[in-house]
Image (cartoon, rainbow, N blue to C red; front, side, top):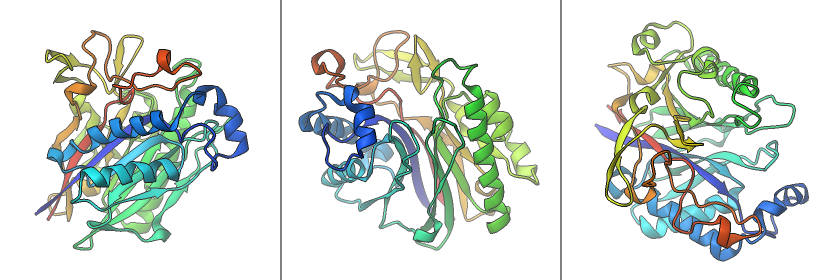
Length: 340
């Protein structure tokens, strides 16, 4: 029996350096203020900080599959896996990225995976459009085929933010939830009701919000998913609504979320699994007890009401706005899937 360590992390504004030649003119104008002072040295430092965390996952073996969001383009992803490969010489990381171009800040969802463990048919890579008048991130879908030949379909999400207010913006996330549920149904129609599917991402809503429970059809009730005759997800995030951790000063504290906003924790970073990953006799089976927030002490702020230590963007004043000892404003989340 082999194990597959699958994780997700919002990398928080992983942009190429300012004046990067591959940046489209419309995007360069839009992010100019945020990236003023975003030097090559700062970009490389951010990469190093991210790598220092990713390499520690899975008992310092690194993840087998890592979904990411808030990445600008293939350039930043290639730089990330280049540095990861220097730290983890047992890994052969590759990237799945579709430049969706619809988000107003030009950020995408993507996957990093160990190509020694999985093969990907390019015909199984899809970038699903999420309807929004002002644009948002696509949902990236990939079919990973394991060495024994079993398929795992993964969908990486980054739903619309709560900008303008959680209530006022909720309709955008409901639409994203409907989009995810729609493609879940289409996959089952095409591949059969027992195909293993994992949906992971930054949903910008909590597990109990309507966008997830009603529109994405993601529940905390495992039995409901096991008995379902239609597309439903089992939401593993309910297992880590609270998690004890040690902060960077070595003190124990209870964390209430995968990110913190105005002193409050939210569990926006979630892992959803289909019925096909819950079957006792299935080729791939999620180990739900392993679902967790990846909490490394150097990432954790010691202050009550604060969570991850963020890196930031210069916005014209790197000394004021950058914390070179930071990482991201989100914690990673992970789970193990066993293969029979």
